[in-house]
Image 1: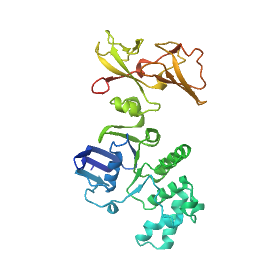
Image 2: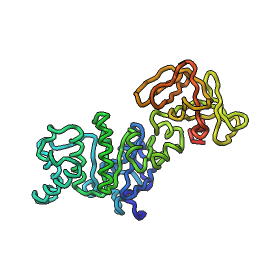
Image 3: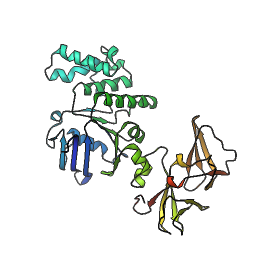
Image 4: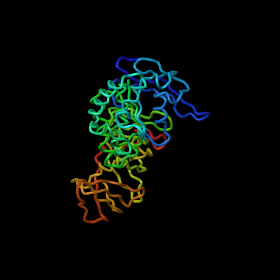
Length: 356
């Protein structure tokens, strides 16, 4: 195991009968880093997290935590703490007793355990709620108690399995800031599973994108946004999602003809093979409605105004979406000029989906 690596996974495979759900997973997580596992439902992210926790037995490969091979260790001996989507609090215990439960079953005296609970409660902002019961708490407060139960154990790593899924949108935004703040304050090593790429992008040092049981790409949030390795990552990372249009590279290799009903040509940042059939990727935020130049003309089919920005869908096939910051400046919805800079045009192989 490399120095400074807290969790290391080598050639991990997991089978459920004939179903191969994790395929040759290799992953190194440095001590103190926040890593998000993200992907669509059924991609294997929760199975991977449960394998790290010891809740799933791996079929082959090696896994180590803090330098110790844990392949055959039960969960209780791995010194990790897990926070689930469901809070899993004891309803008959108040907050203090929920926090101290793991310490008490290890034999710690009640007075000492309560002192530790008070420290943790102060860290997570629950000092005034120690005598309350779960039924008297809001969803966000319950989730903080669940995190406090993990923190009080001082584990080698924290594992989060979609902990914010039960919360409403505004509380999720607040709680993701709290979780990241706690991670930084504790200097913890955290592995966080989510299907929400916005959570992954805003919280993690490193994002691991999985699809069909394989790691497709790993990197910082902006690395994945700026340089997706294939069409899948490009479409999954970023909100709203990237536009994809069929295209044919022009004869000079310096532009691509978009295969709308009325074909339109845009410039490329590099020279590509003339005549190549590609999938062209353009992010909605990179289609500029107020540029001094233009290379696309569309009609607007629908628009959604949020005050801070306006979201448009063009009457094209496939539908092209784009964003304007602030209020709408469109006068004629039938004749809208857009511009996309060459550096913001992505090309993907039409067969393999790999970035070109």
